[in-house]
Image (cartoon, rainbow, N blue to C red; front, side):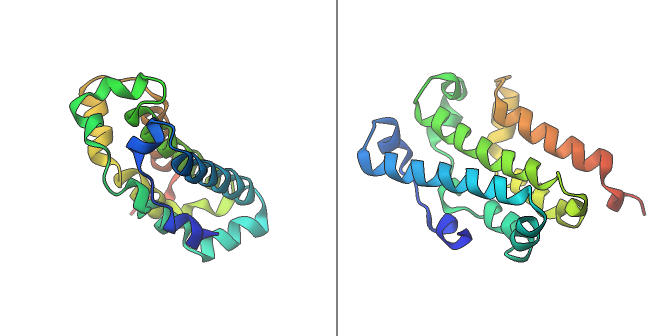
Length: 158
């Protein structure tokens, strides 16, 4: 499943225009994220996902390597329904939601640095959205995840 997730490539412009193939790939991505999120909430599922290095896979997903330039040129586009920016940001929200679910298990601390790498993978975009003072769930989820790790991570104590 993680190999399938890693192989997903998204054409955000085609998706925003309702291209059937892009919609199919988007549906596959959303299904994978839902499945992995539910799996991460079980003990055996969490262990399997940790062994498969899921946070590393999430931090390096091909579909999120290059955010669409529209998001940087027009940050407010993330609020426009079915725009390239909104689709990109809402898709990454699913990734962050999975990361938050991973933190539901007591052993999450051993993956904390890897979870921070997932947030860091979209650091430029998050910075742009914060500079433009765009309020969206992606920023909220990223802040929640970082705050949870900061507040509860014993790794910070030297």
